[in-house]
Structure formats: structure tokens, C-alpha cells
Amino acid sequence: MTTVRTTDYHAAGEPFRIVDMSDAGLPPVPGDTVAERRATVIGPRGSGTAPRPGPLDDVRRLLVQEPRGHAGMYGGFVVPPDDDGAHLGVLFWHKDGYSTACGHGTMALGAWAVDSGLVGAPEEGDVQVRVDVPSGRVTATVHRSAGRTTGVTFRNVPAEVTARKVPVTTSLDVVEVDLAYAGACYASLAARDLGLTVDRDSLPALLGAGREIRAALAGHPATRRPDGPLLSGVYGVILHEDLADTPDGPRQRNVTVFADGQIDRSPCGSGTSARLALLADEGRLGVGRDLTLTHESIVGTAFTGRVVPGADSAEGLVTEVTGRAHRTGEHVFVLDPYDTLGVGCEHLQGM
Image (cartoon, rainbow, N blue to C red; front, side, top):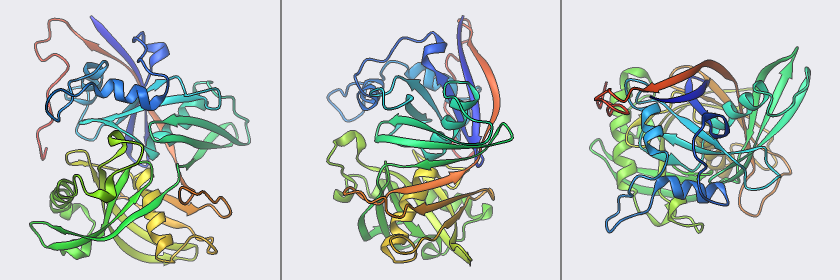
């Protein structure tokens, strides 16, 4: 009988299932850095383009596939950091594999590190949780009041615009998309360019368009990273719409489509960083304009994001995204050796 323990959180509605490798009885993942460990769990590539499953993939599928998971499930394996400068490392995973960045997951990990006692925190004030992710080192500043966590601010790796007005043909129309990197590459476009609005009634059409755009941009030069192919490619497609500005700055609603048709219930943490880079490039916020983006999700939750004044980086803009993360449960998942379904079944598309 196989058992796997998890602690589950959500950040703005998007789930995050945490597996502490040191506590779960799982074997260590070979590699000197988080990026190397991600390459290990992805697995070696054979003669074709599809990788052979690596170690831990049965555990990932056990936790994300039905009946223990669902099509929107997200999570991470907590692994050692690259060095003593960070508190922990993490390998992010979703229904189709392993990602390079995850802002909402970083928020959840910050809250979990404090809740679990891994990182000591004051009753009042802030504490930083430094996390090594495959795309670099990020920080979750956990805000505390009256002995409880009231919010988390995620400082991402530097964000940059990589391309503007890239033409893409979809079944709805030919559109122009913008590309930005923020730990992962995101394609952005206004939903109105496809004749759509960002609401639940339009979700099937938004999902279909996101999948088409992601597929069309596979291999585009602006999605390639100098760090190598494991950090390259379009991770998510952000379809957004402008709402009335707040006194503090722009306000937008978005839906982010990632993996092979997975919908982010939150406003997408790393995707918000990508949107900040694009809005700063347009002059709507950023250098010399200490404004805040209010970024809403399709389920009505929100993150706020800003370009950090004076935090210049030669690699791009330094951005921060703030939201809330809450624990939803602690679980012991079991794989019965007599269960013919094994680690689970893949999700039915559209269910």
C-alpha cells in the first residue's frame, strides 16, 4: 500500500498541493540545483520529442489525475534549495508535466513555510521566504497580523517583453499577440480582438483560443531562452480585458490558459508579472509611475501587482504580486495495490 502525504492551499482560488519530500518518504531527486532536478523528473528524451517519464511521475499523476485530483490541480515537490541563500526549492507540476515558474504556488509555499514552522515569523510584521524555482530565486514576503498570515507578496525573477504584435491565425480570427517572459513565457492579447469577453459564458471559446494560440507559437524565436530548451516555449496564454481604472492604476480581468487547456482560477501570479512588463512598456505603469495593477480572475478573485521602483535589473523589470493564500486541507492519499485504476485516469476534456 503506497501513501503520499500532502498539504493543500489555494491562492485566489487556484489550488496548490504541497509534497514535502523530506517528510513524505520519497527518494531524493538527483541534481545539484532545482533546475537540474526538474530536468531529472521530466526524464530523458528518446529518439523522438516526447520525454520518457522520470522519477516521481507516478506520484505526480497520482495526485493530479482523477479520482484524487482534477483538471485544474497544481502542486509542487519541496526539494533542497540550490544553496544556503534560500529556505527551500520546489518542482512545480500540473496535469501535463512540470513548469518553470508558479506565482500563486510561491505564495502558497510562503504561507506553508510559516504555518509549518520551517521559517520563523513574528506575530506582527513581515518575514521573507526565499524559494529556488527552476527559473531562478524568488521571494515570498509573508505579511502577519495578530499571529496570522494576512497576505503574501511574491517577488519574481526579472520580467521582460520579448516580442510585440506577433500574428497568429485562430479559428475565430487572425490576431496579434504580445510575448513576455516572467519565469515562463506568456502570450497576451485582448479578448475583444477575438470578439470575446472574459466571463464564464465565454470560457469554452476562451479555452479553445488559448490552446490554438499556444500551439501556433510553439518554436517561435521570441519564446526561446538562452538558458536552454527546458525554459523555452509558451507556457500560458493570457486573454484579458480592461476594466475601469482605480485611483492606484490600471484594472484588468483575465483568464490564463496553460498546459494543454488548463484554466488558472487565480489571476495567475507569474502571468501578472508578464502583464506588468507589457503595461510598463506601454507607459501605463512602471519606471517613474509608481502605480498598481489590479488583476482580477475569471472567478472574481484578485492580485495586485507593481513594478518595484528603483529595483533595476539588467535582465528586466523587478515585479511584485500580492495576494492571499489559505490552507484547505491535509491529506494522506493511498494507492491500493489491488486498485486496477492505478494512479488514476486522465481528465475528460471539457468536463
